[in-house]
Each structure stands twice: as structure tokens, then as C-alpha cells.
Length: 222
Length: 58
Length: 248
Image (cartoon, rainbow over all chains, first blue to last red; front, side, top):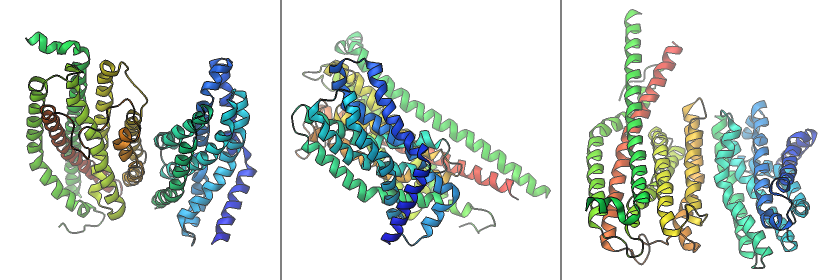
């Protein structure tokens, strides 16, 4: 079974790397939008430092949402999803694997780029470590929760916009705790409670989201 | 005395719009639900009558 | 039970037809009860109940704000329960109940948010604050909108209903967060003063109109639910007849 999942993982990664446009777009959006903010709110260091955690997280959220639409859509359209559903692999594990591939291609680059962009936004030095850690915990959770939305909107009219509407309310707790963690580190009040909450959210997402996504996929394939 | 009631201790500009919004939404929902129901029942009647006429003619 | 005619799906509506008959009889009763309780609640709340020691007459907004907020949560719970029934037992009525309830719940949430804002300005000096309870109620509002949107996003109504059911169950995690958020995070919004372990802390003179309004709102919802589910059943019948005519 693990061999099957590994095969799917390799396939997704290979397909994505062949068409770097899709995933590169999400990461590119992340970088470009963050750059827009100093141009918009002004280059004053104090102002930027104050809003840097929020800007980084909101933009990561939006970028994450952009690439979700294609998570299942390509396989759904060409029939591979039907085949995968018929395979002996449990559908929820399949979802987990696809989410992992998705995160490796979009979430992980954002986690790596975030501190560099933090430099551009004059992020306080105390915040960098926690930023990376919080994003490392948060972006997989975003991918998992987003998978539910992606599965629900397969074949829907205006699927992209609908996906955003569905997924944003569920994203907000991750956003709140993610920013709170970085702010806590910057103000020296200890980020541990917020990081623990993020970790808890990730664990809950790991357990529950694949099940919900699988249910949504099965329902879409009927 | 009526004036004092309407004034709501100076908070009238908050209290009455609040009640008005609640009334608007609740009555509005009721009206639209009733209108949709009537409209749909009318459509169904027309369609079923047409189907019956088609059956009779066939 | 009707015989199974070829191509006819009327037998599927056997239960919903019973529901229709029941609904026709109950709806006027619900309407009367709703009007009676809301009327009584308004009378007691506006004329009998005393003004608050600190907030003065602005406390009267509570008599619409709190029941609306309760209904917002209650209706979502009903939708979540119906969604579970839809997903687990595939009960056709469950889908219709969820679909019919969502706009009503969204309406109550909007009323709660707007009246809360109108109450907050004289009380706290601000129209809005991003504390835990207000934020999670706002999230609830968007969950309702998402539910309505996805229900209508597919040509096949069953597909839309199932997707909405999954969304409703997933979003249900937000409801206990709203309920307990004011306890977990000590923020601007008033902590729980009615449904709490030690018993309510509000005075009886204010509790009575509050519960009268809450009962009235509940009967209003039940009346509206009957009307709207009837409407949904008729809509499904229309679709069936149209499909039959299209494919002889």
C-alpha cells in the first residue's frame, strides 16, 4: 500500500514539475503581493514592521487558495480520479498523499521564502524563527483544509470563486493563531501557546480533513 | 410620555433601527418565502395540466 | 404508497408528501404561536422590563440581539443534524430541510451582527471589534453564505445538497467555538450570562422577555421552515415533470 501511495506522490510531483507554471504561480503570487505592500503602505520601517506578520500570513493564505483548484481538477477531468477511487487504496490516504504533494510544491517554498520576504518587510529579528515554525505548522493545515473545498467544488459552476468562499472561514483560525504566534515572539510574551494551538489544528486536520475530502470526492464521482 | 418612550433615554437612534432591522429581515424572509411558494405552485399546476392534456391527446 | 411507474420518481416523495400534509396543518399554528410570543416578548421587553442600571434604555436591543444570535446557532445546528441525516441515511427530506433553513439562519446571523453593532456603539463606543465572539459569528455568516452558494452551484440539485451537507458538518466545529469563545478569551463581549453552569446572572425581569422572544423566534423559524420545505418539494416536482417531458 505504501508503494502505491509513494507512486502517486512521485506522479503528482513529476506532473507538477513538468508544468511549473501552475505551482510557480502560487509562489510567485506570494512574492509579488508581499512586495506590493511596502509600495502601497509606504516604506516607513516602523509601519512595515508592525504589519509584517499579518501581511505574510494573509498573502500565504491567498496564495495557498489559488493553487487549490487544480488539486483534484486535472485528475477529475481526465478520468484518473475515477481510477484512483477504484484502486484498493483508501481514498482518504490518497487525499493525504495529494495534499503532501501539493504542500511540497507550494507550502514548503512559502515557508522557505517567508523569512526572506520578512527582511523586505523589516520584520523584527525575534520573529523570524517563530515565523518559519508557525508557517511550517500552518501551511500543511491550510493544504488539508483546502483539499475539502477543492473536492466539494469539483465540477461546480464558478468553482474557483466558490472555493475561496468556502475555504476562507475555515482558514481564519490558522491565520489568527499564526499571526498571534509571531506577534507574541516579537513582543517577548512567548509564542508557545499559539504554536501548540497551531500544532493541534494541524493534527486535527491530518485526522479529519482527508475523511471529509474523501467523502466529498466520492460524492463528486457518483 | 409617548415621547419619552420613543426617545429611549437618548438611545433611540440605536434602539429603533435595531428593532427595525430585525423586523425587516424576518418579515422580508416570510414574504419572499410565500411568494416563491405561490409562484412554484402555479408553475407546477400549469405543467401538470399541460402533461394531462398531452396524455389525453396521445 | 403509489405504484412505481416507469420513469416516475413520485414514490420517493411519499414521506415528503406526508410532511406536506403535516406542514399545511401545522403552519398556521406556528404562525399564531410565533406572533403571540413575539408580541408578548416585545410588550414585556419594551414596556414592562426595567432599563439597565448601567446601560439605560439601550439594553432593550438585547431582546432582539440575543434571540437572533441564539437562532443563528440553533438553525446551524439543525442544518448540521439534517446534513448528518442526509449523508448517513440519504433521507431526501433532510436535504430539503438544510436547503430551506440556510437563508433563514443567514438572516438571523445578519440581524445578530447588525443589532449587536448598534448595541455596541453606545455600550463600548465602537461599531465593531475583532474579539473572539464577533469574529466567529462573522465566520458563521460566511459559512451560511458558502452553504447557500454551493447548494446552488451544481445543475444536479442532489449533488449540490450533498456537497452542502459535507460543508455544514465540517463547519459545525465553529459553533462550540462561538459558544465558548467568550469564556476562553476574556474579551470585550459580555461573558455568558444565561446558559452557564452556575445559572443565569441576568435578573428575572429581563430573562422573561428574553425567553418569550426566543420562543417566538423559534416558532417563526418552524413556520418558515414548513413553508420553505413545501416550496422545495414543489420545486423538485417541477423538475421531475420537466425531465419527464424532455425525455418521453
